[in-house]
Amino acid sequence: MKRHISPENIITFLLETPLFETLEPLELQEILHVVKEVEYQAGDTLFEEGATGDAWYVVYRGGVDILKSDEKIAEIGEKGCFGEMSILDKMPRSATVRASADSIFLRVSSDDFDSLVKEEHPVAYKL
Image (cartoon, rainbow, N blue to C red; front, side, top):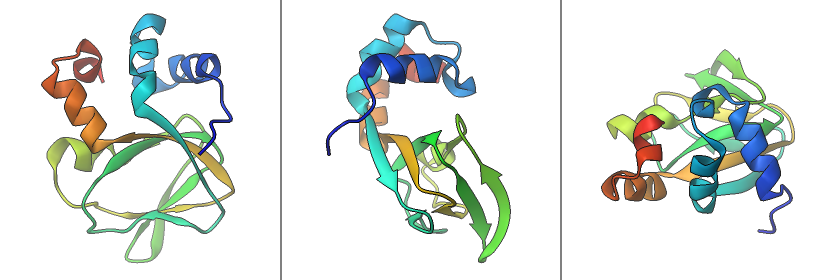
């Protein structure tokens, strides 16, 4: 997929995102290769409750609804992060996540995050 967001804009965005705000711009630049831009249309399901966690996400534009047993329990908008718990604890997804609008997300796969941890990359520990 062609990236629509420049690396500079991704760094600026992440610096303004709570999960990443403790990182320095140079540290963010080092992990740009693991951050992928993905798009979903309103109503698309990103993942289902009970599924194995394969990535975590940051909302660049748009938003998601968090569903438990098909009931909406929360909303996450721009600069919000989700999906990180199953990457860290290796447990199944605790909820279903569905795009609430046409959206762009920054995605970090569990394999890429695990590689950062195995390499003892300081950014992985700060996150």
